[in-house]
Length: 331
Image (cartoon, rainbow, N blue to C red):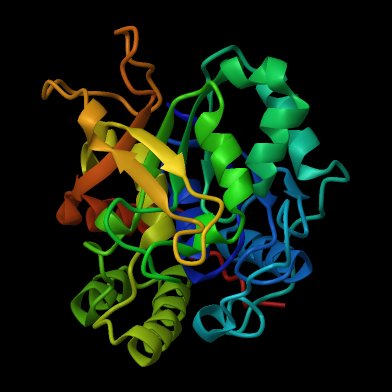
């Protein structure tokens, strides 16, 4: 059972990923940390705490982290996630108190408390918190089982022709994360654009028949309207939930081993993830996410290439069924 620290910036797809993590018995959710990304740190942290009430969460610490990227000003995609970061259905009041530790210190404490190789970090926003952890606690990096992140892509961007949002939001942090001595699995646009929440998928979620499932459907509906207006997609990509699903069930995505580099400069290429397929090390053997390659000199990164859509949607439906009704709207 993967032990997961979820680092996020809710965000519509972050919200779905959080609910998927909480509702999936094969994941042990150790903590939720927030980072400035889809909106300001204050807003995304409030959103995360409200989602805890939606999901009926308890016993999981929530902590706020970095309120800006390592370099430069924050990039906010308000046209996608709205002024609150979670525009759409009305959010309930926050359901948990914030842990007083900074997110980076909370991550360090949890990694230290668990055995080496037990904790997986799943960041689905800017990588600022994860980079700060790697720099502030280098002695703990090797204790982390791996980092499975949503970000990047090997053939396209979404904020620029080259760069995906989470990487462009803090390229310097992303570079630190990919260069650290831990396994990184990149679940990028190449696969998340294969999992669109088209109307028939929304109907699958609504058919669960719970208040939480209806909330998720309304979230995705707003998200989809923004994607249709801005990018003419028939449904919004399930970016962040796919990264979480890849940890819950590695068979949902097919990955190959390849070195990944992050461009931090340039007028057109800043934030690009450059995947070196010359170093691809893939013999077709099943590979669990987060396991280091045993062959010396083999790439430490894995790049998601394909996705089993039916398995993904089945996992999300099962998670919502497992959560059930939480009556979160009841005062």
